[in-house]
Length: 377
Ligand SMILES: Cc1ncc(COP(=O)(O)O)c(C=O)c1O
Image 1: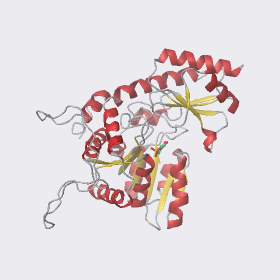
Image 2: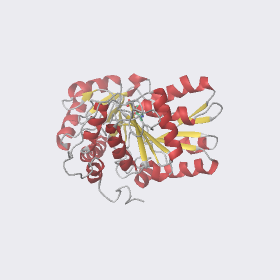
Image 3: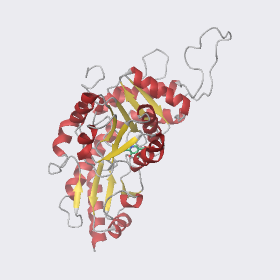
Image 4: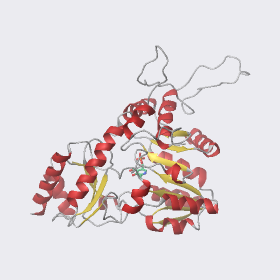
């Protein structure tokens, strides 16, 4: 099974292989975008329109990027969407029927929770919120579980193997949001998920210049239902964004390896730093998430969470640092930081989420150490 999806290879090899075009003489080695709203049809309407017929249903550039994402996730197929939220919400509309019980992360991406509460509860879905540590218990009452691991922004880790067993045991569907880990660090389908949903706006595209999302899985009936939902509700990805994503995926392994290495180094530096109250990173051996993360992740991700004294300390850090961009989102080539209380996350005022870029590790550590010390004066 692992070899079928190229999992025996390293991250960068998997990225390059995933975007390789078929070796047809005369065909371009690199992918090209094919923007098309409509396609030629057979003139007689009794001949079936095999293949592409309309741009909301399919596009050849989507197929290339979907094949790459499926390979990386270890899935039989994937479906691209216009954003991560489009992928998550289409999946929830398909799986969380009126009357069903849906568990969503209490400590995950806040707009997913808002969608469940504002849009699914009025449709008759019973929504339960559970933190990473309560997911397995909450799954005992669920029809559908949406788990996010590591959680954004707290970086707690959910034991996916255990959660998958509980869901399977009671016939519940398990959806895993793989945005923060990426398939370059974690393959939830192999751990028991029915579907993966994710934002490709982050590390997979990696350049902070497009929004995209996807759903991946290996159960044809589920994928067909999500594809039908995409066709009917229309939250599609433009062909140019699909091409940009494809172009970025080839180097995603290389970028992500450096990003994770920078994250591990920053977390180690911040742990015990005089200006830092606490640090969360699943790759720190002392972190509460480390034992589970070490068992289910190949690397520990590009995000680090730290608590500084207060909001002013974060503002001071951001204005003193030369290599840290003050912005939301994550996964880009630039190191950035976001004070999450600004968005209403249930965290301390001084809680900051760092997203590590691809800068040289020593330069980053020197810059952030200096900025923290300046801000603490
Ligand atoms: C864990 C997680 N899931 C989903 C999303 C939504 O992705 P997008 O912004 O591409 O819609 C985000 C965005 O930050 C996220 O962090």
